[in-house]
Image (cartoon, rainbow, N blue to C red; front, side, top):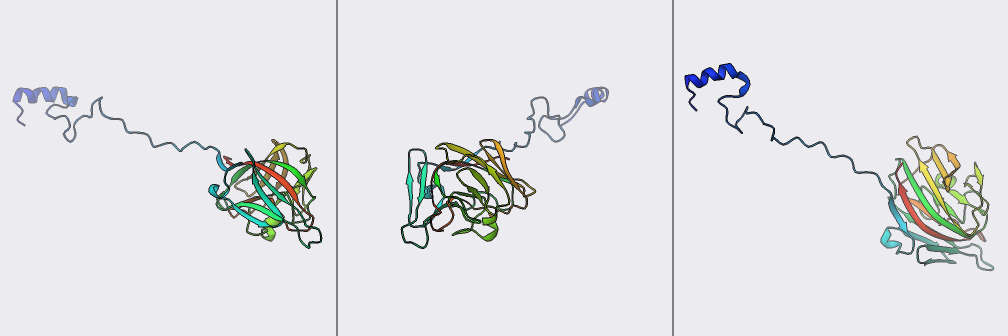
Length: 235
């Protein structure tokens, strides 16, 4: 583009006015109507993830049933009911566990909420429980370490199944209770019941699979449970 001497003089005076440039050409001022660079997308907000909704098909929700008779699984309106028993003259009793692989990330912090009613339960044996919550599980009964750190629910207490710690609480009262198991980045596990701190242990090991129900086939160690929901929460 040709610029006259008169125009050139004005360019020297106005210097920064951008004389002789064409809008949109390289080096041209973007102008006030230029688009503002978008900020990086923010991380999506953390929210609860429903892992089990009672009253719905378990397999469709990703759950596996590990069962040894006598045992039954039934659905109510908003719960799944698990029941085990022991036959007269039998050498072993029923076993019934619901497990879900990949429920949490192995080795990473997590928090689980279980809303459950214990209708009936026989007191646990060391490493065995008819009403159990497992933050790590390998079928059919769990490994030694998984059974040590398993949570048992007795009628008037909860605790770790290796009997290192227990907490007095009335579980067998005909009501639903909220059990929350959290494991932090230092592998410290904590259990709360209806918001009250109950248990803690260090060195918790998770393989990503969780389970709950009657973990043992010990004779006459049985239970009846109603599970309303299992939810993965944000830490």
